[in-house]
Length: 262
Length: 253
Image (cartoon, rainbow over all chains, first blue to last red; front, side, top):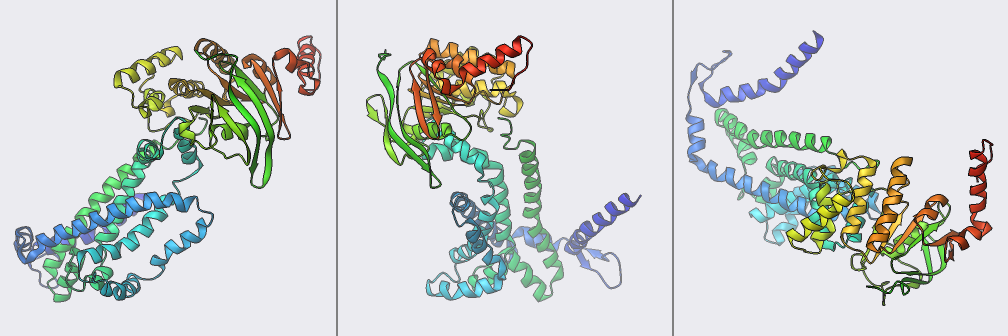
């Protein structure tokens, strides 16, 4: 009984805000204190799907920035996490990698802005991506560093003993072994970029608008219905990512790097 | 065919230091082609260090290692033509049995038909037919060791280094693997250094013998010479088992 109540209340807490967003996104008028909208309309969705106001472009730009940051962060972090994991000062390096998270994004953005203005990167997509990369890369290294354990080292040595060069070790052993974790890393770093607000706003200098920034703008302007529609759109990729993440993690758990008793 | 009397492996005054401690001191020996040298010694005496140094996974502080006509000290591990078979039958967990055995063949860029031919022959030889698509997690310890052994043999190494390869197996599987190794070593003309801490195993698999004590290596040309040295404790081991077989009791040698 208690368990069922808990499940229902948890589901309610998680689902209710989504239902509210969904209703807002199709509401024409919703006078207080009515529980449901008095009139419905599809203007917000039509506007969104038709790309009026440049929203289509913003969505594509946000996806592009997210995909780019995730790919760069994961690729760079996979190679460098190996060096960090086997470095004599591994712990100190990990403390350094946590620094971007110790400061808020606003502090990081302000400190980067001065440099990026001098480099003419502020107000450009490349600048926003570089700024987000600082956070995403640090996160990716922290996520991947634990993977480089002695079992992986033994498999590297084994491949070398069988005649594998550096390239073969990476392509035939390390990448296939780490693939599920790399997919998780790609998705997580994509989310870091996708939901970033402060860095994009500061480094983008109003010239680079992403969906997250647009959502804040809609809220600020008081257009709650369009903001709700935008919020639902913003949630779609993360929900897909979470589902894929869950599947990948399940697959990783069911087929571990099982070397016990080998 | 290589002249079986010509040394294929020669270590010359090899010193190896690990973590500041001298593990191997002035190790010198020669091993002829198509022979197996059994290397025995207590745990921690430097047996594994010797194999890892010859394999190129550790760097000697002093001395040289020659394989055939070539000094291999400056060669990367993957260019020495030496295969190191671990104490644990380490298999690539993302590859099935067939691909594990074919791993070294694919590195050598052989044709697909040649890879299939060679790997299938070994799978049949090692009695693993029907398990080709199984992943390591679905294999027993003995099967994994056979796969690791097959993968090592597949690339026809100039030298095979075996580091207590059967120590984690149950008695029955271990005995069958020892016999399988002996048979394949004879049939395929394998040159091997076989490290073990088990005197019986060393006597079964070895043609030449060596003992490592306190980092120094003592070599013996044949079984008789090895058994005759009282320092190796073979006589004590034989006496112990004879006493047990006669129904008596005794202190383990």
